[in-house]
Length: 477
Image (cartoon, rainbow, N blue to C red; front, side, top):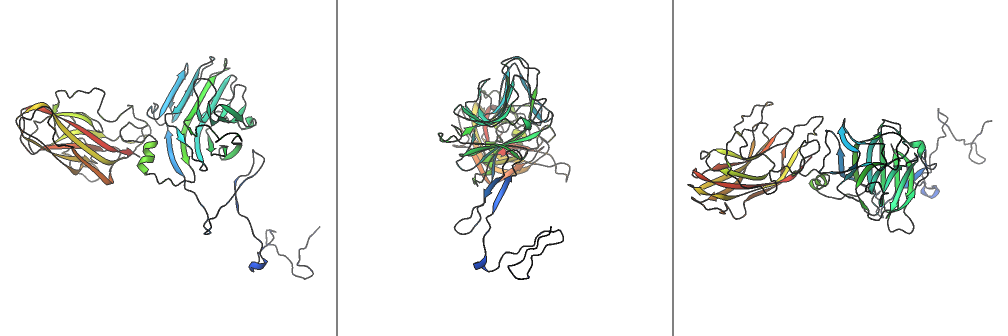
């Protein structure tokens, strides 16, 4: 049966194109025009059974409202050790290891044993602005009877249920559910076990937390939405939660399984925070004064251990870090280096990038050097001209520039400190030290050094020591 569309009693007919699509042109006369409401489809409803549509919004000045996301946390596992500056590891009977770009929560079969990877930082949520928690992970096998898996945002201890949070859970019976816990009162989605990921395949799990509801996505498909309880003041009690991944055995497990965590990110949506980039990076663990992901060492990158004595010190040279290595810290010198020669006070090599150590660049935004006599000087006076040496790819300050092969240090004069002849213990080189901030940060790239050098323009001493405190301000990107 054919159908002809025409205008009333006239002979004007509607047209179709070569693909049999009806050709439509809306009226040009505003008096005759209807209107179209624009919406955005976020999800076609493949799992939920309904399309997720959202209205677009305009201001009273006819500007379409848009949002700018802000990343707050971004972490991965390229080496063989957990970055303990960022992650808290909680285990009993089980282990957490790093290999092949995954953090591995290695399960057992014994009842009551557990492993949990949790950020030290608690991630904020702000009213109508969505908090996006994204975790890439895979499982060695699923489900496992009597083993519980949970991942997302939440406050969780040993094997007890989280006391607050929004997360995914595969329970001991193998049911897969989205969970919203508000001060320990849980609401769960319908069983979405049909969406349990296949073994040894990485999936992207996204939790979108706002003050009205929590959305749960798997690889860009919306699988559940849990609204805020009508009696609750917010979706979760704290709205400041750590990211966590854990597994535990509620009974004797049928087999030992492994949870493999690949990439973790947290962002705030629709909010142009205008937070300085250095603040953002430091909030994610990138502060310069601690070791970065992939480094063999943990803790502070400065040479400033607890109860570090001034000691006997060492004579500075311009080819070795005789006083010690570190991104700042405490260093003691015997001022016996030839007058007019630069000596290395402190030295730090930004790790070169490999597949196990991310090649991060060091941005220095400020520096300070302050010296004090820690063993009375014999001879003098000592007049130290301080400088910053950066960008060289060899330790020696005498390195010669060779285009494309070696890089000599770039130098920035920092200031003077003076120590009188036969200065006693406790004499300061200056009231507040030499400091400098940089509107344009110093960039030190992977495989390059940053150093503080001191040049005695006074008289060489035959005894005594001067101890320097060196501070760098900056971040790793």
